[in-house]
Image 1 (tube, protein in one colour):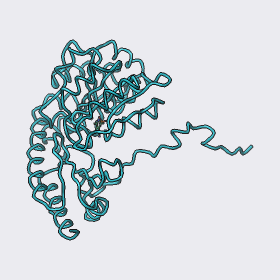
Image 2 (tube, rainbow, N blue to C red):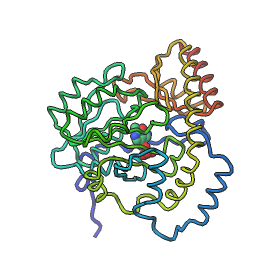
Image 3 (cartoon, rainbow, N blue to C red):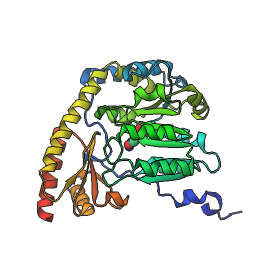
Length: 361
Ligand code: PMP
């Protein structure tokens, strides 16, 4: 019998309403849209990785505890021994695990707006109620509104990115501590952009039993390997571990990451180079007319133009892909976000943008 099936009968209404996370095609383009590290690894390290990949036991499942990788990460990132560590297939997956673990009926996930869109999307996937508190116009935390929202919604979980994506700024640490102290639930500080900021909440882990710290290797140069981590007390991580799928970090990711972590100096030097390029771009963008630029502690820069969608499209037509944030949030009207690339990529972007602004003003 040929029955007719309707997704609307089967699929949850909130999923039917969602739009899938859109990743635009970028083949052959100058890719400055996704906060990737633009540099490749030195050749000797590439050879070591090639050898390792060739001999890795890919016929076997990976070590489900990734014990060796975890100790290499602890050392490389300075994770305190007193804290437990859980790994994810990217930090995206860790957000999802935490959301699933906390999604009691009616439970709330609280964040700010604008923030990393996955906080909201994953809340929806997991059936959590999402509450997003708007940042102030200068993208700082609206601490009074945050404390009111905490009192009203008693969130199970709060996600704050430090520095924030897509705005690029660090929130005031004193405000973050007020939030951690006021909330009855857990707070995840997402330090995806830590390598480009001179600040971290890692030193506060020991002081706050409800604080968890998330990092990723994606922005440091290993986006393709997919490895994120969260550090915090085992009372929380033991519960999250029950949800983590046992083989979520592949054999290749485990082995290759360990080799690269032996050369942490290479990744950190690349991050420094990105910071130098960031300063150069900020100086050049600041000198342009018809453009408002926001400070950045991350590997990307947010700026406002008069007609973001037109500029975005014209850059794209010239083979330069950045991110158009116009109409994603009222605070981001006419805003574009550019990831810091190599010297050449940035130079081409700056020249193309300058030409477009000259033509459009
Ligand atoms: N957190 C923030 C704030 C991000 O901007 C991103 C990536 N855009 C992630 C987490 C996810 O990173 P990944 O899954 O690659 O670790």
